[in-house]
Length: 197
Image 1: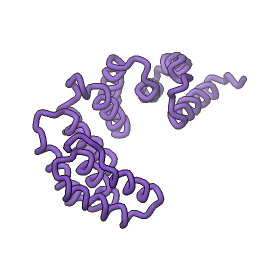
Image 2: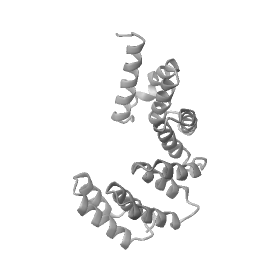
Image 3: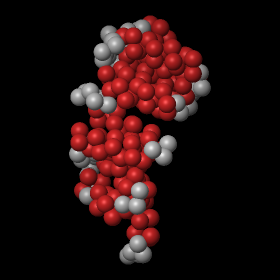
Image 4: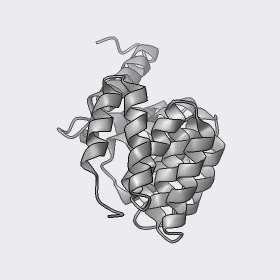
């Protein structure tokens, strides 16, 4: 059962969302023990451990995940995302860079790398990864937003505004947080340009 979700995990995720963390972690740990080859169990257990600042346990689960299949880029992508979620940017980048060229993981790996590089002020790298993500998924509102933020920070606001005005930020599938961030960036730029209307 390495690729199937487990009903107990759904219960643990609900407990976590309700902030019943200790109960959720107990279930995540049990699932990882009962299903040692299930990638969902290992990923969820690793992320919960990391959010609980139990980094040795998180790293143990991620090592087990990566041992499941050395050649499976999805597992390395998930490891990189888990490190990013748990404020370990250097480890995240190390894993994400290894799968940024893989067809199966190129979009998400490059998007994650763009976000990490932007946060670290590595704007040239952030732009490169955002553009790579957009080559894989041209209509991605998230990659467009990251690229727009980088363009604003590198004094190319007019290009950023053009990208944000595009329909990709207005579609039905745009997450409300992404839309709000794009609108806020646009509003700040309009204010700077004294386009008050």
